[in-house]
Length: 380
Image 1 (cartoon, rainbow, N blue to C red):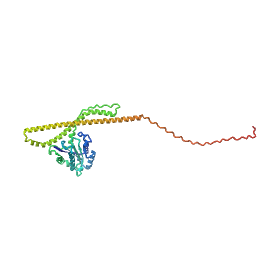
Image 2: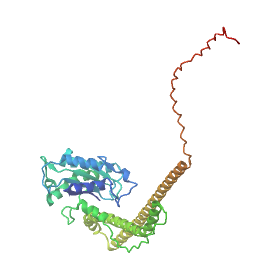
Image 3: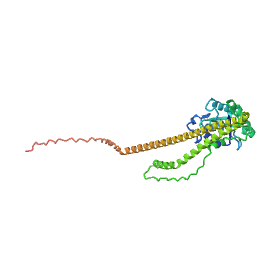
Image 4: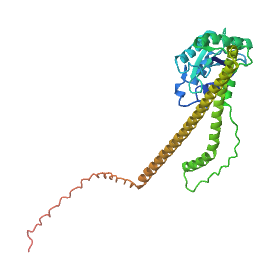
C-alpha cells in the first residue's frame, strides 16, 4: 500500500524564499541529489530570479511584518509506489498542481518544480496565500483540523485515482514540515579531525601558480580521507532515512492488514500455522538479503561515481594549468622576439632646399679705347 504525501512550509522572509529557491534550482551544492539526473528536473519558470520577481510582484504593498509571504508545498508518494517512472507519475504531479490552483487560485500558484535527481521524485510548488488581496495563510494552514482536512482532500482528489491512499487519520504521526523532511536527509555528520598541515614554503623564483598547486596537493592529501568518510556517512544516513520512511509507511499499512491475517488463520490447525509462519519468515529473510545487497550495490556505485568526478576535476584542473603554462611561455617568447628584433633605423630626412639668391645685375664697364694722339708736328 502506497501513500499520497503532502508537506508544507511557511516562508516569512525574502531570505527564506531565496534559500528555498537556491536549493530547488540547484544553485548551491545538494548532497542528496544525483548530478547526472539533475537535467531531468522540470521547472515552470527558467530560474530562481524569475520566481522571486513573480512573488514580489504578487505581494501586496501593505502587509504585517510577521505575515507568511509564500507557502511552499512538497508533493510526493511512497518510494515503493508502482507509478514512478511511468505515465502515472506525470499525471500525479499535473493533478496535484491543478488541486493547488483550485485551492488558491491559478494566479497565486507562482511556480512549480519537479525533482527527479533525488531518491524519490517530488514536486515543489510556491504559492502566495492571498485572500481578497491580502495575505492570509491561516485560512489554509491555520490549525490541526485544517491540516488534517487538507490531507484528506488531497488524498481523495489526487491520490486515490492513482492507487494512493491517505495516511492513517487520527494516528500519532504528526504533520511533517518540509524543513523536517529535508533535515532527515541533510543532517550533517559532525567530525572534528585533528588535521596537521605541513604547508610548503615558496621556492626562490617559483611562480605563484606552481606554489598554489603544491599547497593544494598537501591540502588535498590531508582533507580527502575526512571528506571520503563524511560522504560515506552521509550516504549511509540517506539510505537509512529512505529505508525508515518506506518501513514506516509499510508498518502503517500492515497495521490495517494484521486483523485480516488473524481472521484468516483462525480456522487453521496449529501445525499449519507454524508452517505458514516459517514460510513468512523465510520470505522476509530473502527480502532483507535482497535489500542489503541492493544497498551495498548502491553505495558502491555512489563511491565509484564520486571517485570518477574527483578524477575528472583533477584532470580539468591539470589541463587548465597546462594551458596557463603554455600561454605564459608564449608571452615570454613574444617578449624575447621583440627584444631580439633590431631597432628600425630612422630614415634621414632630406635637407630643405637652400633658397636661391637672386643675382643682381652687375653694371658692365665699357672699356674706352685710348684716344689717338696727335702726332702731327712731332718729330719722331
